[in-house]
Amino acid sequence: MTPLFKKLNLGDNKTILVLNAPDSFEIELSQISGVTIQRKVSSTSAFALGFAMTREQLDRVSATLVKVSKGDAIVWVAYLKATSKRYAGEFNRDNGWTVLGNAGFEPVRQVSIDADWTALRFRRTAHIKSFTRSNAMAISAEGKRRTRR
Image (cartoon, rainbow, N blue to C red; front, side, top):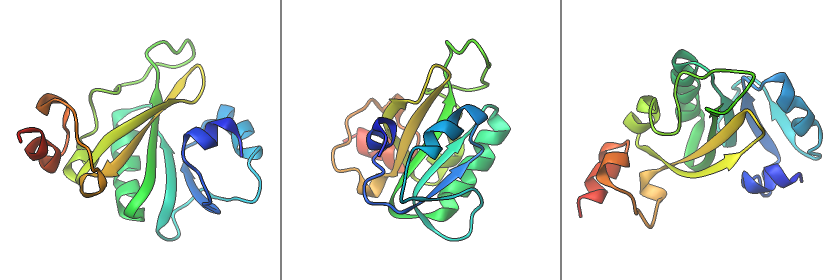
């Protein structure tokens, strides 16, 4: 397992869903062995990573990830860093996550992929034991409710 996929909590997952991966990420994918990489949705997924540059892509990828992830699936969305010299993104860590928030997900972890991309992990709030953030940073109704306690 590569150091990046270790950080992404790949664990024992043998099948992963990867959506909209840029060409620069293909090298990373080629270095993981014993794992089937799905590029199209065919069933539910325990590990999924989607890439998005625009808000439209983000909404589409997010809706797909919500549909395919069941239970406490490992769900990551990769977005462009503000410091990227190659690309300009339309959203960042702090905004644009409406689809995931409306589906009851909250961001829980961030991992740098490379000089251009960062991945943000999302979990369903029901699976988040310790919820420590300001109410303004919660993106789901359940998250906002839990921060008011």
